[in-house]
Figure 1 (spheres, helix red, strand yellow):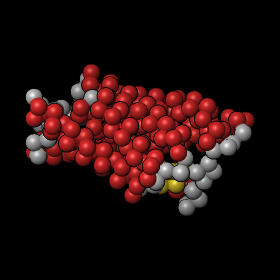
Figure 2 (figure 1 turned 90 degrees about the horizontal axis):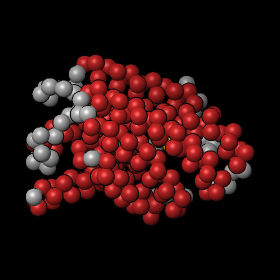
Figure 3 (figure 1 turned 120 degrees about the horizontal axis):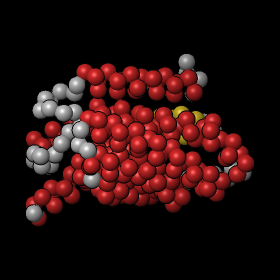
Figure 4 (figure 1 turned 180 degrees about the vertical axis):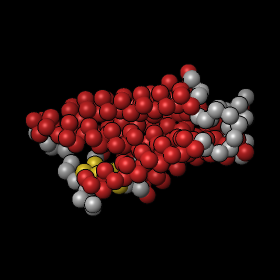
Amino acid sequence: MQNERTKTMVTLAMIAALAYLLMWAIRIPVFAMPPLKYEPKDVAITIAGFIFGPVSAFLVSLVVSLVEMVTVSETGWIGAVMNLVSTCSFACTAAFLYKKNHTLKGAIIALVSGIVGMVIVMLLWNYILTPIYMGYPRDAVVALLPTVFLPFNLLKGVLNAAFIMLLYKPLVITLRKAGLVSPSTTVTQEGGSHKISPGVLLISAALIITCILIILALTGKI
């Protein structure tokens, strides 16, 4: 039992480090004002939740948000709170639902629910906190909710979900081979094949390409 706990802690620490690295290395501008960027850290955190449950997703998110606050963030504790709320509303929701149904259908339902949950929660929290930490008048924030914050979080959620569908199964299989997760850990695609199903691959790729094109359009690159 102690050995299993140690392996779990080591794996979660590795995933937290990966999430921080993704946040630090990949910051894709989506909107200039207010400055909103896509960071794929939620992908790693949600995968941790899929493997170990929603509490693990919360703990990894908390660690990454705190480390981000004291290293690269310019928004202080309010930014850390917003990061934590955003990630948990997506990752913990998806992990909680996936825990109840370890199938491809269950993963899709969980991820879609995570997207919806994050969009709704972040509309509320942006309305409450954005005027405080960005200095925007509340009326201006209200005007930005449907035109900036809603599409941003929707794009972010769809990209997260697509990357998770592509990466979860290979990562679980790799961790199994390394002896860091239990051999009984279920993956999103039914069956024992190590390959991602063509349908999942095509749909995920199409969603990623579509989101990238939308981001390029929003930033005036195309």
